[in-house]
Length: 144
Image (cartoon, rainbow, N blue to C red; front, side, top):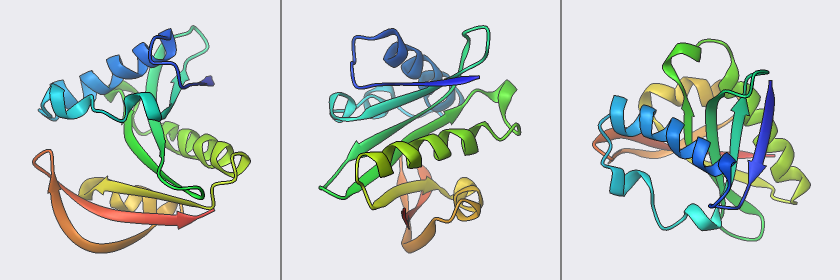
C-alpha cells in the first residue's frame, strides 16, 4: 500500500479521490453531487491510499483554514475495504504531513457514526450535533 498526495485538481490522484468520494458519499449516502464537490477542492490537499496493484481504495482531504489550523474532510473508504484500519493509515499520514507543514491543530466535522473512530485517534468532540448533507455530524479537534 502507498498513499499519494496532491494539490493538483487536474491530476490522476485527485480524480481517483473524486471517484472514491462519489461512490461513498453520492452513491452510498445520497449526498448531492453539488454538495460533495465544493469550492474548497482547489485549496485542499488530497490524499489517496492505493493497493500494491495501484487500485485506489480510500481518500481524505486536508483544507488549510488558518496559519496553524487545518480541517480534515471527505474521509472515505470503499465498502469492500472497511474494517482493515485503512482510515487510521490515512489519518496517520495526514497528521504527519500537517506537522511537517507546521499546523498545530486539526479540526473536522465527523459523521456521528464515525465519532468513535476519531476519538480513538485522539480527537475530542465539542459543540452540538448538527445536520450536514442530511447526516448527523459533530465538531471535533485534535492538537498535534
